[in-house]
Length: 317
Image 1 (cartoon, rainbow, N blue to C red):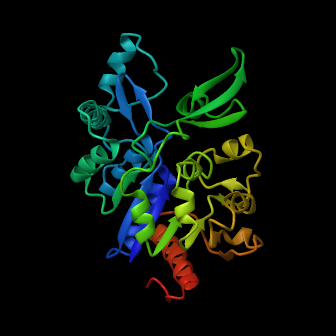
Image 2: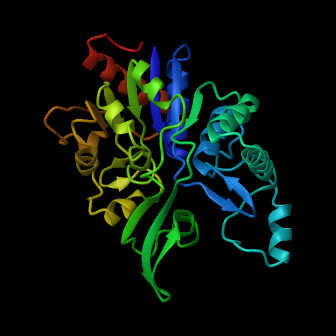
Image 3: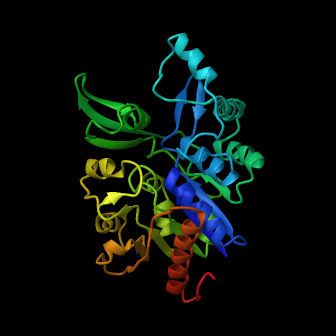
């Protein structure tokens, strides 16, 4: 079975680990969000791509869900001693190596998709990981604070400000010019099913959907989404702040409405959200908390079973 999944960071990565466990013989292609990418200390940092790569490759810090396990921060401490900014974004020593290799390859003329493939050759994530685009895109957030109305990089709003300053707008800079990375549209066209994991619907999944041609390609496929909202609250992170910024309520119903029936054919919700409904979409309720890999695999199987049922192909077992 050929499966395509769109993914952001921690929630998407943990779901993908469950998906890989549920169907180990399937061919899984992951289209990763690059709107979170940022240049720090002269290095290109791709937080979501790295979180997927480290999680599936067995190198993630399980407790925090991002960064490398057994990490040290000597370089960060030395940069702080020199007064180098920003000091609010913490890169570990092991993580620095990844960003150095990526930046060297990009500077040598390799596209991000080729660089990501090269990095994954070390980690062997068990999936094909492709960035949504090789073109530069960055998510920026318009806020108003004591310094006035201004735009800041998404990472500053998310990490330094902890989304505590309300976002007036969230903008993917470069979206109009960006094109899907090589292999993205082909993978979607050849997929048996597409799964939208419980990633942030605005700045992860929503960002990928802004790249020309991706949403249209997905609308031709059987797509099942897993709600990132359980009982009116995000499973993890601050997705509620992002939804508020675009005028959407923090509910499983509102996120389904945001994606829409042209895109989504099936929708998994938590048991407490069993009343969710949308014309043209089959909604099923399941426990959606990913306590461990086994729980994530159960959710992935339910998503695949729903997708295959919609296709008339039986189930994923």
